[in-house]
Length: 118
Length: 118
DNA sequence: CATAATTGTTACTTAAAAGTACCTACATTA
DNA sequence: TAATGTAGGTACTTTTAAGTAACAATTATG
Image (tube, rainbow over all chains, first blue to last red; front, side, top):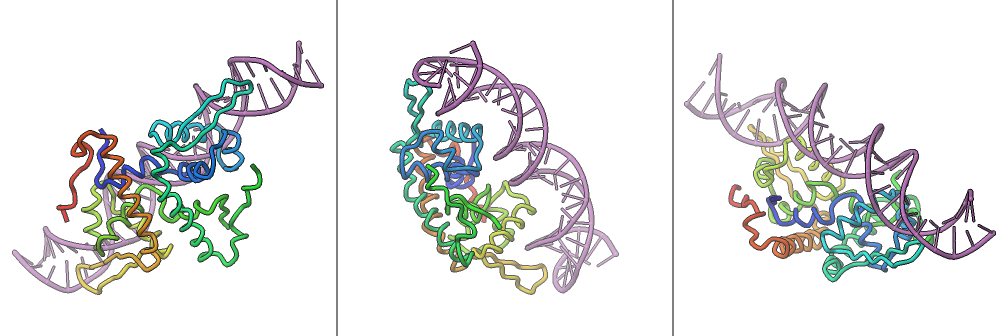
């Protein structure tokens, strides 16, 4: 069984890594289809996206809903448990914003506009 | 120059990875010497510890103070900017605690007691 | 009947993160 | 003079994370 030296490590195991926080930040705004998430995260590959979504699902923070259609339609959303991360995610987003403002004179240089792609 | 698709990525660049949040969670409680941090984090190696501390220092969230003694004494503490992460760190710690409680019937199984080692 | 659209899987490869082992410095103490 | 304690550096190796490319399934459409 996994051992932690400090409880926060358990949190990192759930939302750590390169993509999970980003995925959750998108899902906190809206329920999303797979393709939407891919467009919102131009850097992610299909494989990584699926993998991270599965792990988040296994940890109970997101819900995967499959609609019986062709072509398939799959929607991801936060579970109640996932919503318990809202405070953390909001703070992280806000901190990231102000960190960019602090670090770079004009944030246009570092922020790729992707919101309108969806 | 680094590009972000979403501001939260900038936050992850500063506190992402396996160790940084753990280090910061310790420093939020107290200023610490290198050796204390090593004892608090039995899994970390000298190399990783130094490396992570340097990066945190470069990002302006921690302060490194060297006392001119032999054997050397080096103390790490949060900067004002580092304290701006307090909300995030506290929430993360709290979420980790309750996640352990939710996931494991008795947390003694997963939590290694290390606090008293320092 | 071939093509598109959507989500997902798999084997393989590459890149990044982390770990190992050994080295330095130097005043104090035994 | 040899060992101790503290913080850190470095070359090298291993492990883990992430990326690549090809394939599957299904039905409506041209």
